[in-house]
Image (tube, rainbow, N blue to C red):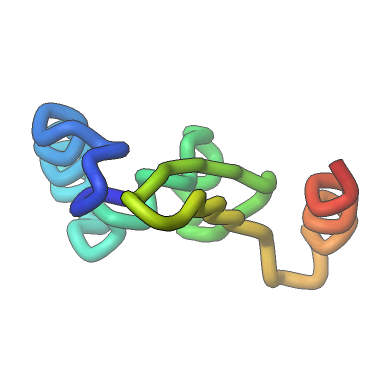
Length: 81
């Protein structure tokens, strides 16, 4: 998403700065899809997030779904939409 231009350099810098301040610097790319404060604080995906972008030949959809069993109902609800 970063290389495809979906996420601006300004947003990338913001994610890097904020994740470093929280002691989670390695999560800077995860924050592209983990948009909620609770997801960022806990370091897990809770809600489904969908991003779209296009290349010259393809339409691409990226789906970030929770994998922890406590959040699987959220994943199922999001995937069914």
